[in-house]
Length: 295
Image 1 (cartoon, rainbow, N blue to C red):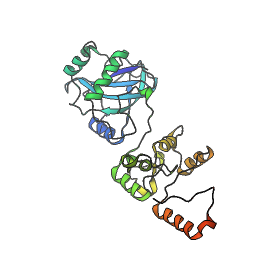
Image 2 (cartoon, helix red, strand yellow; image 1 turned 90 degrees about the vertical axis):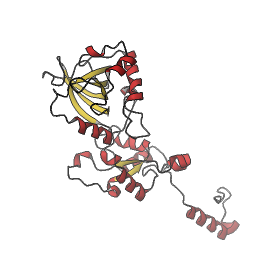
Image 3 (cartoon, rainbow, N blue to C red; image 1 turned 60 degrees about the vertical axis):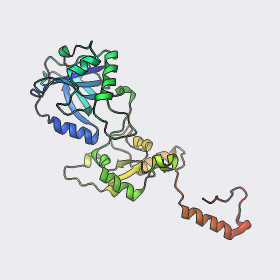
Image 4 (spheres, rainbow, N blue to C red; image 1 turned 180 degrees about the horizontal axis):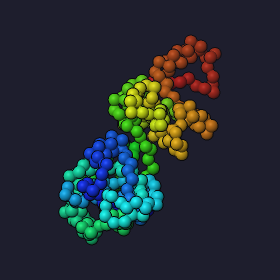
């Protein structure tokens, strides 16, 4: 898949509050923005270079979502662009913290950093080395243990689920889990049961209100608007649909596929079951269904 450079001069691009963009990426993991550039198709990696009085260097990584014909000359960089790209930036350094020419020149001496053009396509070996450098020197990834760090793998090799800021809000997540617990509301899977202490309190939370209904004064209710979902069910809630599947739809899909929903048996339930068997005695025993062992 193609990878390209996007050049940005902060003094020439208007209407872009870069500090706010960095904050949004840190909070939600994504920021979508249009860039005039040629030579890229949907799915291409895009590496953002800053150039101007603020310094020069590698500033960020994104993925091209769409590429459409464009007749308007670019305002973000010099040159002529024949396409308008919608780029999802997923990893950005604050302005001033970019990976500078000395570091870039040492890691990739044959790239020619002072002569890069806007929309220039990278050759695969150089792109692989930039990816390795970004993995070591780029920003810490947004905490999301089920996903690889942005920019460290080619876009075509990574499938992600978009999470909005409500799903990443730590307080909202804590309230949701306190109410529902950590088992998946759709399939019943528990990371703690499957992985022991390593999986304790680990679960995704899913925002049930469609994004189209959210307005600026929207107030989140963690109990009615969020549900715990395992990574698989969270992916299926979003996969191939414009509006995420509801919990009942997920359960129906699971049921139609023949999957038996799991559940957690509480110690009190086990104790009551064994006590019932003791009271019933041998007459109540079923040789095909032995008693549940005590814990």
